[in-house]
Length: 83
Length: 384
Picture (cartoon, rainbow over the protein chains, first blue to last red):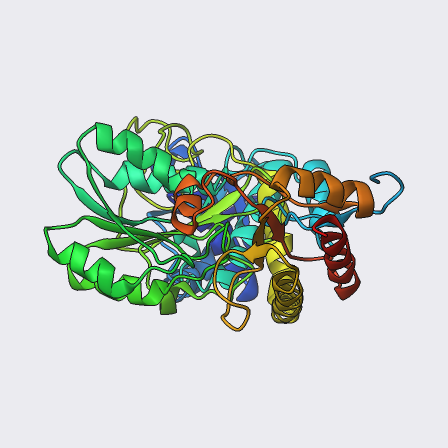
């Protein structure tokens, strides 16, 4: 990680409803989540993705699975200010 | 105001008025504070719009007992929802069994489908508009049947159909049950898990007390009618195929965000106050019904007062035509009712009023016992 950047995990969703529901579920779990445009690296150019701190990736996976919210992809990104 | 009378609104079966607290304000907030396009972009206004639509979906799903919010589809209305299901599930060669009291929202799409080769078998009702599930069972047994189609409550007689029994009959023979809930949702306690329909189409602006231009359609998880329209949904635009996931599959194009938000606020109101409102509607309906049957020359359509009904009371008089009654009600007492065939010629044929139509009193939010008493006094005077 370079100075001034941060690592995140990003989860993609097939529908807006799933993305918004994921946001609600993660906020209830105390996970700092931000909905962002789906990064190209996730495999799509449209839609919403949920960005969470890298260290919360495992907790996010568990919380989404428990709430039956389907994430169709997960990547790591390094935010240099663009996100 | 009608000739200085306050409006006494007895046309809830056509649309609810006024709306409960919070509905209009929620719609204004949706426009002013959440005016982006839900799912199209991740800027603040687009996200706010996505959140209010998701929240509204959750409220309506909870009200109707829908376990998974994604199975609750927003539509432009009940008629659209029924068209989606009927045209998306039926193909030439299919056979359907339908009740003889259906609204034109079912009858007209079925007429088109029949012309295309769908066999439509009609099951008769009794003179009060009741459908006997045993009659449906006999009809379904005659040949392989794709769907049973039935309203939950009549917009003419208020008759409540045994939807749960219909679901059992349909499923026992491998058919799906498609329900027109325009007059039931909001007015009757509804739990789709208990009732068991495969499709349950609701109007948003009647008993659900939301605005016009929005409806809700529940689709059971295993029921996959083809979508009625294809288009953008904000998801993976590189894929030119229609998404298969709900709700996006059935909600192509920018939806009615203010309408959905208003409907969500109305559903929230009904979750908090629906039981009390339903009790009041039952009380007022019975009071009106019992008063009307005492007026000489009046015939009240549908079941007797002791039988549960949706809050609809339609009448004909042996001498005074419905249109004259309606005009006199408004002129004398500001009472708003609807006359004619109520888009339900089949129901009027069944109850014997196809030649005259009827005067329909639709009861709902905002009406009081005093309104009913004023209506009864006016009816006694007009029908003297």
